[in-house]
Amino acid sequence: MAQTQSPRCRRVGILGYGQLGRFLALQLQSRGPPLGFTLAFVWSRGGVEGLPPPLRLGDLRLLPQTGVDLVVEVAHPEVIREHGEKILAHADLLVGSPTVLADPEVERRLREAAKGGGHTLYVPRGALWGCEDIRRMDEAGTLASLKVTMTKSPQSFRLEGHLRELLEAAMAAGGPVVLYDGPLRPLCPLAPNNVNTMAVAAVAAPRLGFDGVRARLVADPGVPDCHVVEVEVTAVGDEGRALSVTTVRRNPASPGAVTGTATRDTFWDSLRACHGHGGCVQLC
Ligand SMILES: NC(=O)c1ccc[n+]([C@@H]2O[C@H](COP(=O)([O-])OP(=O)(O)OC[C@H]3O[C@@H](n4cnc5c(N)ncnc54)[C@H](O)[C@@H]3O)[C@@H](O)[C@H]2O)c1
Image (cartoon, rainbow, N blue to C red; front, side, top):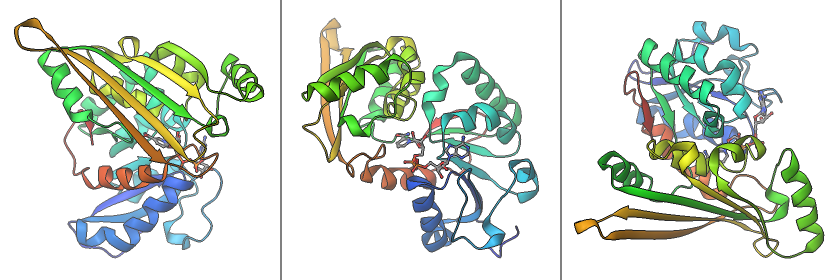
């Protein structure tokens, strides 16, 4: 498991070896050390072919022996639900699947584990444009409402429950269909891989949180090669007058992919900001 490295390098473990995991593992190997990061291991249910054996972790129970400083989850929300607390007892944790935080019990346990262990629970901003501004407005108590609309091609969705049936009907209909419009919390378990950007919004605006952020999910065959994220913010401005901001981000994506290509770069930027912020929750 041990790898030759500068003593100042943070050892990074990656959970998941799909689009994001492979990209981050490559970046860490090729560009990490001068930036103070080195790849410690990769663990994934689907195997980690192509990596040299010292970089493969077969069993997550061996994590404490790896001397890892930062664990990056880019696998599935269930991985955080099952292992998040134990990881935070040993290392900082970047949660790439923040939809899991819509479960209040998971959020509570992870926040407590971070505080108790002195390790940071990082939430990467992903495709959420204006994340820092939203956080500041929430902190100042001026944020009044936050609505996030995500529009993707029907093939880009991985849905659960009744949303699956709605999606099938939408595909048969052929045009754009609103799959969901309402509070974010109940949507997260129904679309765990598709609404991470919305979950980041709830973390950035804890006064609104998963119950106060409004979520709108649209299937549209007219956008086969990108994911569109529209963020609508209203805040109380000077003399009580409303301030409003709307941003629209068109994130290029391969047809049918759940992850946009620009998201890989944002995740790498987020990882590089994880220098250890102590026992708290930190957007990065
Ligand atoms: N925060 C964001 O803005 C954002 C953006 C894109 C993707 N994501 C999330 O990041 C995660 C990874 O995305 P991706 O595009 O790389 O996905 P992917 O499907 O390409 O890869 C997922 C990898 O995790 C592994 N895996 C899946 N379930 C697992 C489990 N239960 N236990 C162990 N390994 C498991 C798979 O074998 C695969 O190696 C997903 O949960 C996705 O929803 C978040």
